[in-house]
Length: 80
Image 1 (cartoon, rainbow, N blue to C red):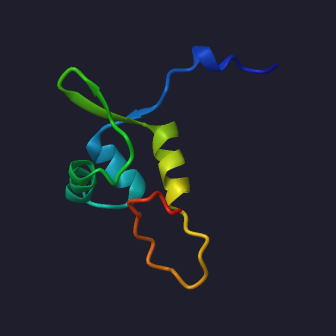
Image 2 (cartoon, rainbow, N blue to C red; image 1 turned 90 degrees about the vertical axis):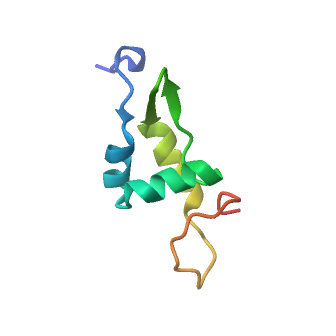
């Protein structure tokens, strides 16, 4: 039986959870947000959260297909 996606809660991550998920420091996540490089966050009142599907899409957009570039650094143009 197929599950109904509308009944599943979306996974939301805190800055700390996001930093652990991406294996970077919380300072890096905060810097990315400040300069507009990281995944788009969602502000719920005073609380900042990151949707896992948006984070995963952002990671995919950072995957560089250019041979020879192994820096792994997220690019401001989304890897294009």
